[in-house]
Image (tube, rainbow, N blue to C red; front, side, top):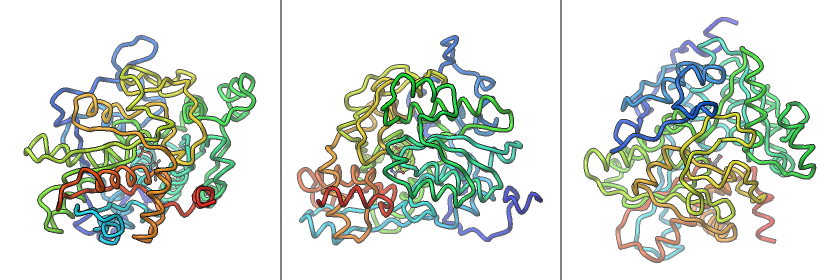
Length: 433
Ligand SMILES: *Cc1c(COP(=O)(O)O)cnc(C)c1O
């Protein structure tokens, strides 16, 4: 294959000026720095070499960067232009349906090829790995959105991916692993027999439905074994928050175009924190630099309430303790959440950057029951037509609760609609009974 057919060299697509040219890094504007990740062997702050077995140096540099803007490579902007900028819609029918005087907007990431915000980071991760000579990426996935998005990105850049999917989701959501196979990648139910970590877990807990923490242990183990294989993480880490900043940067421009001075309250769902951070951080950065007064609410499931019920402390990202220790809101690395439908929100921890913003009082959080989320999702679908991903219904439920109780007339509410739910219809039909 030549470089140009693998996609890492730009293929001269004319990219709209509305596609961001840089990612925005909130680590340039935080009043106090985000606590660093620690090497689990020494409890000292990580140095780039500690991560080199798993990630390419370009992504490690982004992980620790405090530059405000980092340029997006042209080949990545070309792929982004397939669906970016994503639409920001005013939800007037929804406003009417719930009888609010607030103005509700939603930023819709379901227009990407895999139906969620995840390709915003999968594409640059595949790109930077390919650039450094990597041939295969391993990863874990909950609902399957990340695995499918990484498989999509790998297909475009001539890489392969191998995904471990939480067993309960693998069984409940077969279309996602079929999607990965169409893109030329493979997917295993986790815990699997293919890794040390997986075999140990199966011996100890034969009936386990799996967890993201377990799946991470398997994917990391395989990546550590092979120098041509790296690991890719779809959320939590700083470089993922960075890539997702295209969402919020577009919202700032789109609100201006719509004639709004600022967003008053922004609601996003939070699993590992990437879509919420991507949406909120550019607006929060504007608050910190320019004195706008946008408020933010991270919405999480009552069944996996990392922020609202977890502790803010150093913890491992996975069950086996293979990952660096991260300062974050956590329910404990061995927490196995119930098999809720919003499986993308079943992670025990939370992005250290989002956690830091919450800890500093810059972002608020709320936990919402599954039935309230689906009710909000159905209200949204009947008013606006889009069937939201079960994860996204948390942001909708948070926003609707606010819009029908506390909101003032004319207040601008923005909902992060992180994905669509067309591959999650069994979850909806269960609720409709
Ligand atoms: C993965 C996923 C989430 C949760 O992950 P974050 O990193 O918290 O964004 C939310 N919504 C959708 C549609 C997802 O696929």
